[in-house]
Length: 106
Image (cartoon, rainbow, N blue to C red; front, side, top):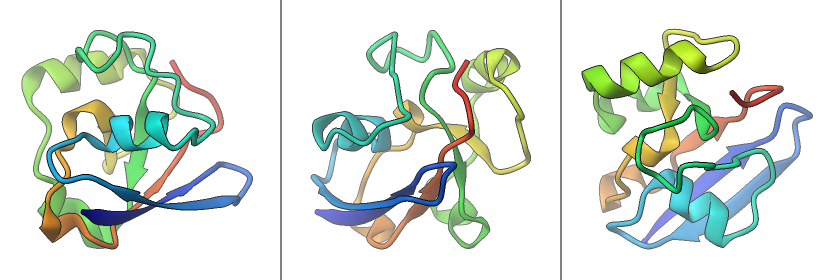
């Protein structure tokens, strides 16, 4: 289990425990974190689970695959630390992860 902090664009924080093996997106959906729509259900077929990974955590979350990179073309305000949360698998090394949500999805 990993404790993950989701920070809405407004600054509201949601600190939740997410089971190992789930994705950061699934953790948000299961804990009713607003701002992650996940329209495709985690199939990397939309950009409605876009998050900004805190820079201190970039190395631990891994890099983007080509499909994720392509889908981020449909996201708003993409940055160097942008990721689709459906592509970040939770493991014990991500305990304490902080992600920020953009002002709008897709």
